[in-house]
Amino acid sequence: MSGGITKISPQMMIAELTNWNIEINSPYNDGWTVQHYQKQLDEMIAYFDRLKMTDEEKDFEDEKSKWVCQECNKPTFETDFDYLVSPTMHLGCQLQMEKEVDEILEDNA
Ligand SMILES: [Zn+2]
Image 1 (cartoon, rainbow, N blue to C red):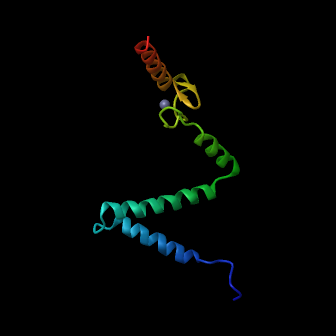
Image 2: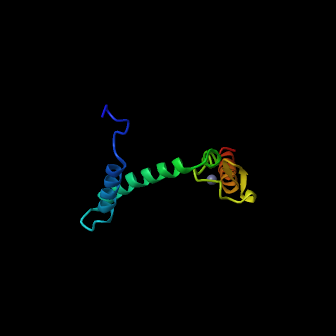
Image 3: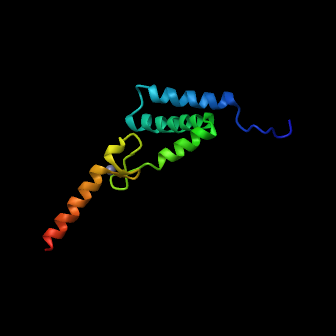
């Protein structure tokens, strides 16, 4: 074989992922170790999920990832329109900001 294209076989990747899953579920591992392997596995699953997506689904996910509140950094995508000033600002966060600005202005008056 003249230096095959595939560097790691699917069987080897599956074996590695299986090992991670065993580490995650082992009662002998401490929290840090479990978290370490879980993080790796989650990363792989997210990657596979993305591979399976159509271009349309990827565009949707990319758009969705931009819907984050500038003030609290939480996602706004699932928030009802009535509670948003914009895709990047919760109504509650905007009001809180304005209240804080008013308080500063009052203190300096
Ligand atoms: Zn917010």
